[in-house]
Image 1: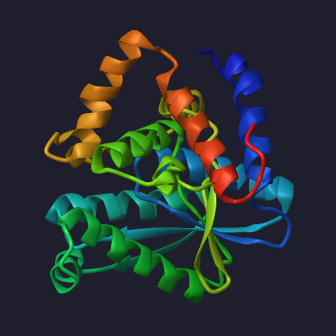
Image 2 (image 1 turned 180 degrees about the vertical axis):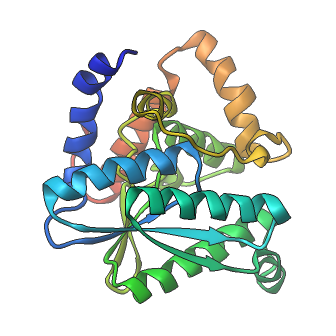
Length: 246
């Protein structure tokens, strides 16, 4: 996809979707891991913040895992924000300890630690919105993951576009309208770098197996399977909220 065609077809969709989630007077804290999705999100929201007049900062969570690699990720995010003139907040947690205390898997322990740290940083900075970089592929993967684990109707709603996280703090996900390939095209078209977490390729995690094996297999029979799963999630979220489906 050329830069011209990307700007014509994808950016208006991103702008329209994100404008429903934030606007004038908001204080938006962006969860920045340094991966492709979060770098795309931060760059896009910096541009949108000038148009919609909201405050913007970035937050990076060091989970106390992955040793030097995690410290290098933190340094990358700090330097990125410095180069873009964006305020950078960071916090280190002990995800392993939290997982042990609450009898959680390492993955769920890291998630709990991350959200607790986000709440602390959001309150410190005065954010009312926490923007996270989940995109349409993540949505499709989540629906399949919930199906494999066994789920009720709520699980078919996948990742919510917005939800409360704490008092006066709401999670919003402005990239759920675009695919992983489109976030990567955004980075390429804007000459942006990112880091890659090698644990994303470890198939011992079910989500990674869904991403690398199951979804590609399903796409051989139905190339639009990701979009179909995302639309199911959207319909289910609307139904659970008492709204009419598409």
